Image: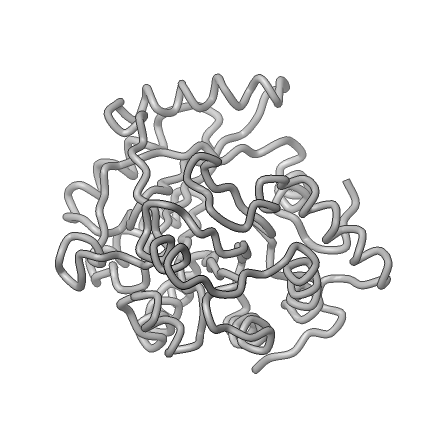
Length: 303
């Protein structure tokens, strides 16, 4: 489907001429912001769901997820093994080596590996392992950044610095490893300028990909308790769409957009309730892009 921006679906179809599905896998990782290395509180917005699939082997996880997703896409597909939950480079080199190599052998149609983590969860040994994997398969590393505003990062207890992020991206790019960065719109106290500046800042890295989504206020989080006790402004659907469209127009036109919205468990979600209507959010973004005759990167800038 034609879009005014570079979606991951269109990117993959152009590259591989067939549907590429990312299959989430849980390697039973934790996070230095949870296990006490840096903090036990985690990010204030983070809800720690218990993944029922985590008790299964990688093979069982993959086959379960594949069966569900193939009800939607029935043709022969390619797959990317996607270590998604928690910080998936935060472990011994032995564990990482074993899990990554096992994941690549789960199915004959797996064409790549995607690993989500934090920028403070890498060592020289891990960079070397990733370098070797990158020569064997299509490797992407996903890094949570969320914002470049240091005050916001401290308030939400990110517990890593912008300098750590920059060093990590530089190390990965030295090895020609594709980097996807996560950012959140609507963090407490952030202005529209803060959100746009985060995109402008990221442009200087010539990123392979980006994930943008709204802030979710979940019941079982520190931020959820703060919201219920004191309250603070939440972006409306209209404001969110307006900001995302501006971000897309500023974004490097070669950066692949992996996400423009997100999903939160309905039973956990306090706000924004409009985020439950994912297709409405996407349609509103597309409508505004068309109405403005706007395209990704047509106002491209670097901070």
